[in-house]
Image (cartoon, rainbow, N blue to C red; front, side):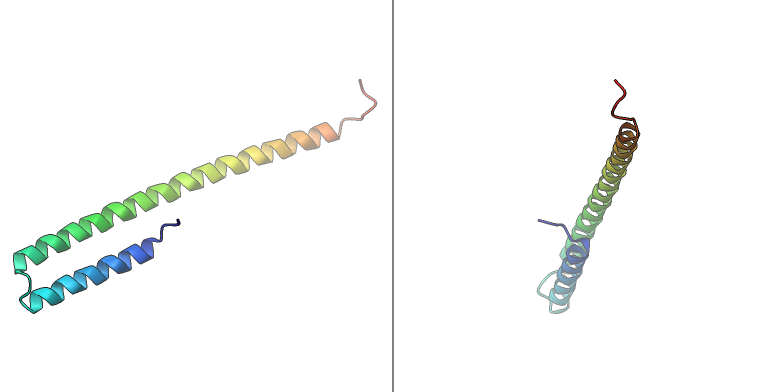
Length: 87
């Protein structure tokens, strides 16, 4: 399953909107709404930080893989340039 931060952020925005509508309808006390909104924003912040950290880690791994592949190609090219009758 692939994480989509945009979808998470939209979902949090939607939930916050619903909470504020409930507050406007007096379905939730104002202080409870504020606490829930703060918790949702904290969740969003942690999720976005985790996603950014994951993307940075993936980029590092990709860079290391590209470097290994490049080195391997250089070694293969050097080996293939050696005449076969040398031994």
